[in-house]
Length: 447
Image 1 (cartoon, rainbow, N blue to C red):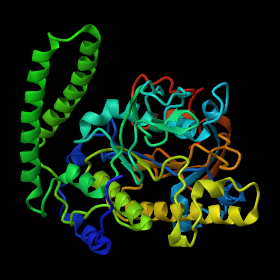
Image 2: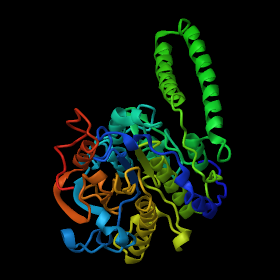
Image 3: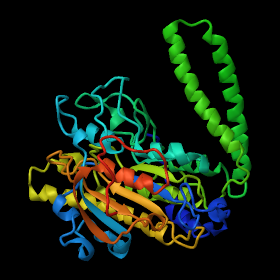
Image 4: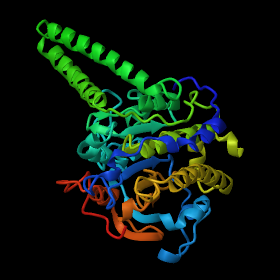
């Protein structure tokens, strides 16, 4: 992970209040269609992942459907209860133990957005599947400057043995471009901000960003010309490796070309974050702020946010917990340990609630809130951290999806693959020809 630096979070948050000077959304005058709401405003989706499952009795409401009463974990969402729906009955059977043995944490996160059983390997031959965020981004990514954004408050790893013979790639990456290519999330809020809006102070970022793109173009041209010259001197296997590399270069070229065609680059009147905060609570908050800004400026409509890797053993001194999260999750029904995990669950939920409140208080191009025009899934690939179970996963869907969702309820679904929910969410974007995803058996109804 990058070296952590202090950040003036209060100053940054005050600056967000003046972000009303952002350029008007180009899509504000667009007709309803692909990845837009009925009013023509952008439709957005984010997936926020928390590790190690949840304490089940505190997670689930204790009353049914419309009259549900929030449990202890979800109490921070009380003011937003009409804008959330808690979904029971979602499974990921492909994460269950099988002939591949132990490794439930790797399977939990590797399967979460792909719906497939990941290959057990600690080598470079990782295999999962394309994640639903990338399925959607492949069809709507051309509408924004960034097809998707990937965020994390953890390390970035694509190799090594992290869980009983499973590659670290499965636990430290949520998004998968293809079955063999995870997309590394960005852990540094400063680098993420500069990627979105450019370096330097407000008023100068746009030109700085254009200058950097010109430099990128020169480097790409040099690399491509050099690779073409080298190609004729290589053997067959080396040529295959070089072709894979050139495909990656071409993807970068396409992104640079697309960025060069954007005349107006948003330049929010807020300070650039200084880097990674030393306090985890502030770290999560700043990254949520970055995601809110990306949605507000219509820089992207698809995002994933890995709060911490599945199996994370982080301690939480912010709430007086010195033991590691993963250690505590193996509580063996010891009440003291269960209570501490419940506090950690609520810690994460409190940060998520603040993010939703920010979206709910920010007006979109059509006068609705960003939350109204969004679908925000919060969940984990483990249900019970002690049992390592992957049925009846904790899942919460926030937002109205631009009027296509009906929040304010506790939806108790029959046991179905979580992939069924993903198909139902993808349908809201007006996508074509997505008949299945992972282990889906249909569309989740009732959301």
